Length: 308
Image (cartoon, rainbow, N blue to C red):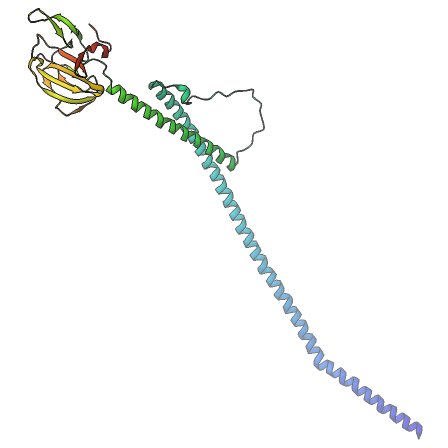
């Protein structure tokens, strides 16, 4: 009986264990297989999604690289263009500087200025030639050279302004200076001083110089000034009287026709009358007088290239 009981107990234990393993197996089949399949599918989908994201990122990277390459090419083109612009500007300034130097030399010579004070000529430069490896000028080098040339051009322009001022002053002084002849061509028939009067032969003071020229020839102002008289004046005939600076007055007598009026400003060399023989005159000529502070002086000291 004990043996039967033991066998029965073992069988029941086996059935219980078998039942437990059976239930575990069924649970695995019912729950594990679908879960595993789900996990497998999930991992598969995750792998596919990761691959798609990588492709998107790769395309974005390719687009960025393409954009960067285009930007770099544009920057290179702009840099090359800027270098060309700088080089062209530099060449233009160099040519302009050469022209300014040439004009400056002529102006200094024409104005009789000291050339040492205006360095328009090429400066002294020399020395043995020692070749070096050539290299393209960078934008920085061109910009520096451009600034130097611009400064040199500015200096030249300042010199020009100064020369023009000096020339203007010189022209004004020259215009105010009594010089030259009151006719374009002619000769002196009677100088300043004591002479035998042409009408009665007695000794008399001739207060001017007589210039003979063809009738109707231009009578010229020998300096800039203001016309104070332009009228018929006794023995002078048709008279033009001009007041100048520094107390000078000039008179042009015996004119055929007057071309200016009182109060008119005249320039040096301006035609003020036409030569004639009005007043106390024997033939066409211009009687030319110079007065300083109200006293007649010999006009010969103010004339240039007068012929007798």
